[in-house]
Length: 107
Image (tube, rainbow, N blue to C red; front, top):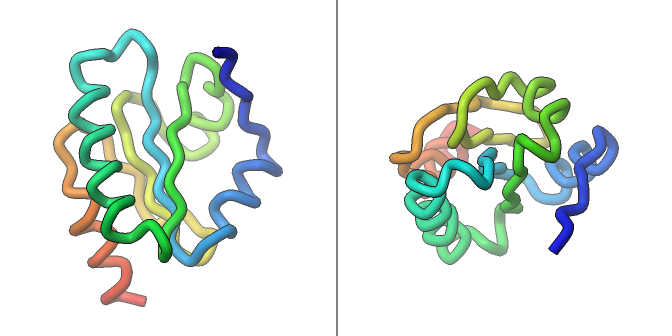
């Protein structure tokens, strides 16, 4: 399956589609960490699916978008609130649900 590349306008529309948006930046070659991060994203989507938008971007397909956000290592997760980047964190072991909850409390 060919991955549809992200453009800046698509990214902008996505992060504004819901109050909270979370993007998992990854690459096909990072198989060891991919499953861990995807599981955290799935758990968050189960809990916050109606309140938050979730996506995954392959940096080998969309390096320009990753660099625009400041992603220099994968896996990484970028957290957005009201269309603005709040934080981009590298590392497979992230509690995505807790981060979204923190954003909700701090709004």
